[in-house]
Length: 212
Image 1 (cartoon, one colour):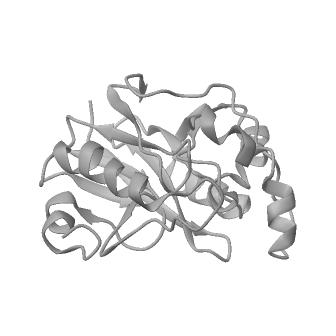
Image 2 (cartoon, one colour):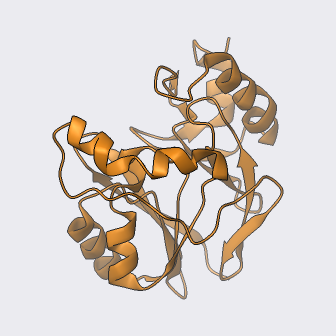
Image 3 (cartoon, rainbow, N blue to C red):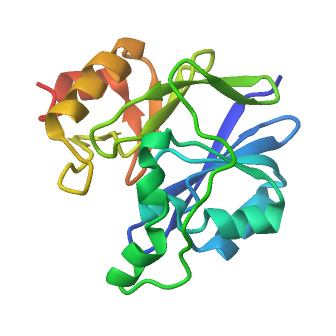
């Protein structure tokens, strides 16, 4: 098994971190949260020489799923995640996009929803599923215990947390998700988030103003 690698492709006017996770040796991997700008995502996949086995979704907001159906059509792979509690958000993507003046985003129909306790994988890289509501009702986090790495979507950011003023958001629920699900994973766990730079959980536990 090779090292777990990740390449970020910022997409949409929201500069969402669409992430290509893949094995450094066999170049098999997944695309996490293809929010839009699918040609740029496909170009990055080709540039890295990655064979994509699935599309993984952290939650149902348009900047994370708006390009998922187009990418699925291009690659012929399944869309996996998020938790079914985001089903209503997934059927409202195109309408929401129009309200922002964005075109080309499609409602998303996952091939499989995920629940906490399940795992997903590519090659030998296994990710545990954590259900972390608060930013969105069905938000999930992908955690690779062996690599000490989590893709946390919009639950946690460097120095901040996910916004909770969108439909289905709740600040107290979000902070509880972080304190009970993410921080116990360990201070050394590194993370990629949905916007901006990633970091380490311990640094956020010590310095994030929303958590101290």
